[in-house]
Amino acid sequence: MMHDSLALGIDLGTSGVRIAVLNEQRELVYTDSTSYERGLADPDDWLKSCIQLIKGIPKPFRCKLRGVAVDGTSGTLLACDPEGTPLGKALPYNVACPEQLKQVRELVEPGQPASSASGSLARALRLLHQHPQPLILRHQADWIAGWLMDDWRFGEEGNNLRLGWSLTDQRWPNAFEPAAWREALPEIRASGSRLGIMDGARSKQLGLPEDLLVIAGTTDANAAVLTADAADDEGITVLGSTLVLKRFTNIPLRTGAGTSSHRVGGRWLAGGASNSGGAVLRECFPGIDLEELSRQIDPDQESGLKLLPLSGKGERFPVDDPDLEPILTPRPVSDALYLHGLLEGLSHIERHGWTRLTELGAPAPKRLVTLGGGAGNPQWRRLRQRLLGIPIRSCYSPPAAGVARLALTALQHQHDQISHSGRESTELP
Image (tube, rainbow, N blue to C red; front, top):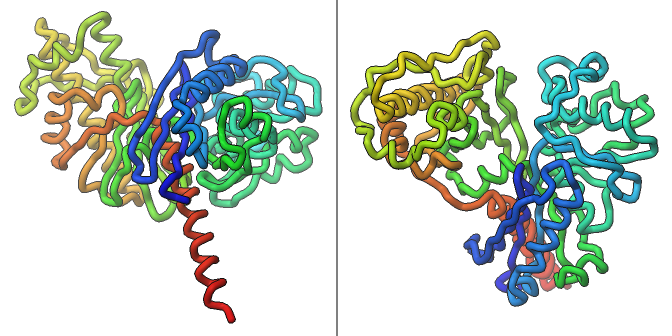
């Protein structure tokens, strides 16, 4: 029965794993987290963390779990043998492989998510060079989902964009087909679709129901957006180490610098990511309590400063300019005034970003939902509302709750199908 069902979300982040359990009203009934012991590159650490957290779910909740979905850091790639056993460490999303760039450019067109030295395709080519074949290549979330089923055939579409998968064409590039390593790539499934049933031995090991559905998840960034539960007229701003803007759209956006279009749970999610963000604030105020410093700011007043808070040279969104220089001076004597100016600069970038997404075809948001560390800063929120001219609300739910929503939606869809099929059968003569 649907009213007894709970859904589990597993969020594999940069520094650790978090889980969330939702009921059918999408209420968070349980959450927990743990940090990696050996770091993002160690798949045994991912697995150990997941097992620890799942076993820690109170038994009354575990018994009612009917679906699970996994999100992970987009681009963290692992080479395994055909049975899913890791052949070594993973290559994390932030590892570039410039030695593979020439071959990458022979395989995919410029401007595609997989076309850079920091894409998954470049990491895949390095892994193929390091390990004997046959092997399979799986991203972080796909590998954990495969472990749950004891079946590593599948990969979720959004996690594999940087490996070369095309959402619009629904296929791998033609240049991949004759390659000896073509069979190393996963069978792609849509985010929110059913992958299979949890393996019996795994369910006994974890104390989970044997009929637990494993649902295709998404990336960690998209999971964070899903937890915001944004309305159709709302945009999503992530104020983390970098500034990220996201917007659900009816169709994928036109190609633009620094932008991308994912499909999450059957919906298009477009957005862009700046090189600016909270990391600049930490660099400018090392060891300083920014929450306390922010209280000294009057967000209804202008700072009088004209700053462009980039961590270094170059910007990708809302403008594509690798030579753009940051403007971090003059620095006033008052730290509060300087922070005021930096927050204004970040807010101007955000405003420009929403303008750029609108130019590319996204509907202009009437309201914003804010996620990330900066979401809890009331002075910054007031300042942003003044400069952007639209209402802003904050969301503090963990990304694991976002990917749990995918599992819950899949369960509800299955329940509706069964109910509809039952009604049809009773109407037949």
